[in-house]
Length: 193
Image 1 (cartoon, helix red, strand yellow):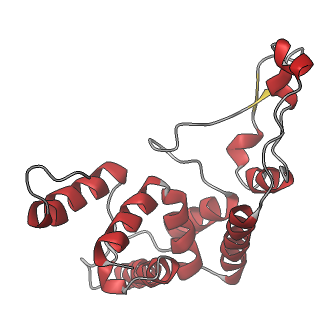
Image 2 (image 1 turned 90 degrees about the horizontal axis):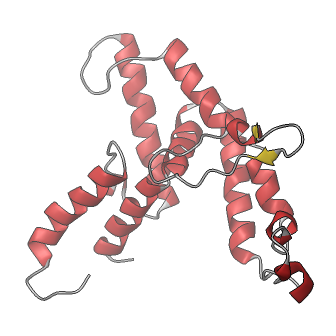
Image 3 (image 1 turned 180 degrees about the vertical axis):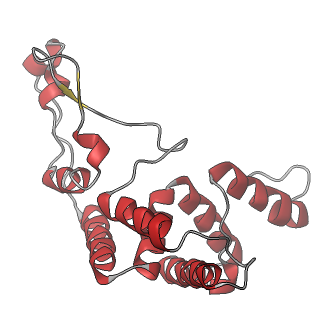
């Protein structure tokens, strides 16, 4: 993997910062969360290896407006298993006569969190909450240690050196960081990205 590929991978990773939260959880907190993170990785790998293709609706189904309500991908149990780990996705919208499960498609703006990330954040805020790299007291040292453990975990996840991992506040900052640092050094007028 080239250095730019790693940088691009990290920028894309910021777009799905649930993975970063999960990596933080695995690196910084107990075995229960670590096992959940491992399970999510296994589920992700299973999903990548799934060869099932969507079954298109029949002509009769396609003629109705409701075909999409029962449409499922082959091997669709996997996404349901993952979905169940996100408490907010258990919300039902609509009324009693026409209940609809919450479908959230705005993850680039704000990603929903699985239970183990919520648990890790609650644990952090109730037992370690402090500034990172800026204090000499016990809470700050603990927070810094957990933060740096997350850097190591993310580095392993994307097959990079831990020094190549840069945490940002979100996708926009990550993409701008790549554009202004790597881009200004390596791109010239006329290059296509």
